[in-house]
Length: 142
Picture 1: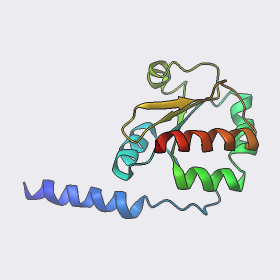
Picture 2: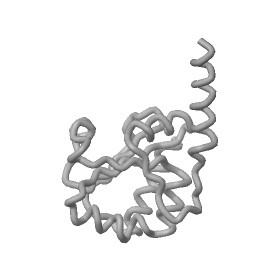
Picture 3: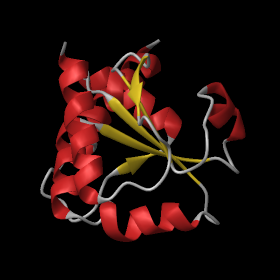
Picture 4: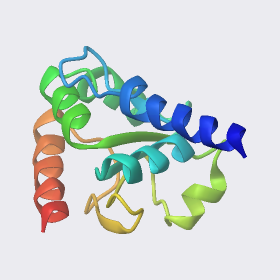
């Protein structure tokens, strides 16, 4: 019983201290699906699910241009828990969310309930993506 208490305290410390979000980071902090969902619940923050694949040209283009934009990095790290889901490795998760062509963008509230998705799957430049992020953040707060 004492071991369980120590383990719970250790996990809590890892979540509150080890996973602190740095909005001024030079990269987006990506989590696995399981880690991100747990962290979203613990921190009460909405989730951004990026469905992608290694072979996807538009996914690589988003990595190179959109996800490297300092404004996008700061906004995602500050307001969302970002989760990268590889559709080839996590097909069950992609099927559950009815992922369309990739890249696909799905947003969940802190409890894992859908709150929105991009009207059209596919590549989003920084300007388009920022508008989407701001709209979803506003919807999540209501």
